[in-house]
Image (cartoon, rainbow, N blue to C red):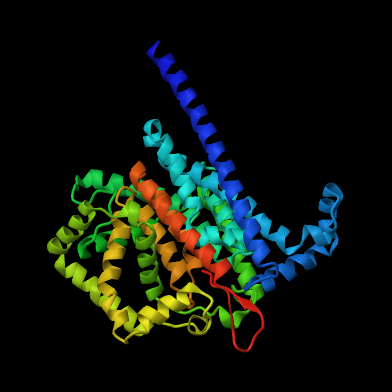
Length: 466
């Protein structure tokens, strides 16, 4: 009887959660449509990167590919592929991203399912309004679609549908070539699961309780142990075979991508001079700072700050080493893209001008803040397994370090991945996070719409944006 009542109660809760989520989706779409209408009225012509994206899409529309759409909707190609209609596609991706974020949160936080209806729904809503992503729902940029297919790829991996995941991964790569990193991450999670299992078995045999498998050991001896174990695992034919039996669809995508790189003579499709790869290690430090700011309401608290001070006291040599390495990386590997110094339409231009260019020493004085931001980032993953964390960090390095241009859009997917894997925050913290995102979104959209300006040598209207 008790079991029956529990099932009925759970069913009613799921229905209630479904109604709440549907209502939020509808409200979110309505508000986004109103904002979209205002943005499009103010900026009718293609703006910034749209001057490349929209003509490309319109050329596609002038071919035979748009005929089924025209026939079904009884619209002309000019209407279907007008600037406004092309931008509207991203509003549909926004709805898809909200739903995918919700499904990912449900899947990643199964253990907390019975008492977190409001927290799951609000987490999904909050992340779908993440400012850097949300702003580009109103322009014809690739960010909404790129994020949608990357999240969808990862969701299918979590459900064990690896062929579907690999196919969706191909779609994500078509939106942005660097998404191959997140396809590799999906495969990496499978490798990490096998490695975690082998690590647990080895430590159970040795009865070693000092290095629990759920934590990244922040010590030299711990790092050495992990490196040796990884080399042993990757050189074991039985382990490699077990991994390939599961991860082969991702390997096929990887081989296909390598073929593309060879034929294309590089990863970049478009202006290669503006997308040069380099070892810009401080990009990782900028990302940690970016993450700390946007996750402040849900990641930082008194107890975590206290734990950081305790960690400093317990392992001073390790933190001194990390600080020295960070100083060296900032000194020798800081690259500044010409756009960052010249294009005053982007917010990073002002961050760089008003912070980093104030004095030559500023970039070094920020290193302690970077160390804390990095520690806070890693501490958020302490509930995740050791090798999952290492797989994520490897992909994060690959996604950030080669980028010469400081561009906040490149941080969208890694930030969402970070935030999705954090333990579910309390309802109060989620409300504060949502309010922070709402304020930032309102400010950026207001500035874009109302604070236009003109360059001295151009009649075109210029606007501020991410």
